[in-house]
Image (cartoon, rainbow, N blue to C red; front, side):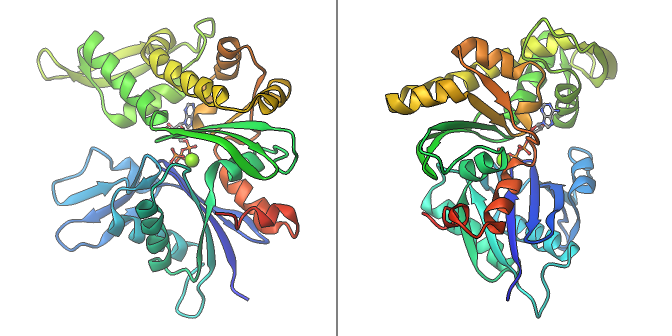
Length: 333
Ligand SMILES: Nc1ncnc2c1ncn2[C@@H]1O[C@H](COP(=O)(O)OP(=O)(O)OP(=O)(O)O)[C@@H](O)[C@H]1O
Ligand SMILES: [Mg+2]
């Protein structure tokens, strides 16, 4: 029998689950390619380090943007290299793949995803609705009639979903997430400090200093950028307070999206969600104070999934390992 794998192909990170083994791969969704030969140079963390630092003959690509394929060839190449690395594909063995797909993706985007994963060396490609996998991975009782709510704040999208009886009752997807927080930090430095910083620097500052509540202070960090006055490199210090002000409007948009999802939820399920609370997952859930911030804004209980960066992949894994109802929800359209 063919091996079964689950893939969470995220805008920032890709994780692969192998049935009976667990999560076997976790790498940034980045690939670098030699433009002259068309050959790939490296993928994952090594390729990510090259972002913004390469000569003109090398392209560093993030093939997934806002949860969907941005470049078909680069995506196929990225997945093939990843699967080869884990020795999951060969001439004699093609695994069956279960790939997560964002809820609001179009038919064309879904087909593109299936084609890319198939061409990367898999046998059958099945699509799994991402918020369901995230909820299962976060430990929510998705099969229960009582409604529960998951909010996945990834890099490219924030997906909010209310789930009951193994199905999505209300779901919304917004293209505002971690990458927008990085951009907000870049804009802040550009406008307020007149310093141009790169995407990786902004992400590093976010991970080190971001807070969702101004009472939390994470101190300060060194920042290197380009002085807009004279074009020279400048070293400065960024504080947690500054990062908080930079990202505050983006966090408010994320809360607004959760609010809209709740407003569209049938009253019976809203009361279930009120009593069980909202569970946050995705990299954005790691911002200190975010659960308290959302809880104060919505006057609801909010908690964080045990492993926010892995929830989706853990969820596909649990579905693959289950012989019962949990496995059946894998196959619904
Ligand atoms: N400790 C942290 N604090 C704040 N943000 C973080 C932290 N760790 C990672 N992130 C951010 O989380 C995002 C990655 O999260 P995740 O892996 O859930 O996204 P993804 O699944 O690749 O994206 P998407 O689901 O939108 O396609 C990135 O924007 C990253 O900068
Ligand atoms: Mg994700």
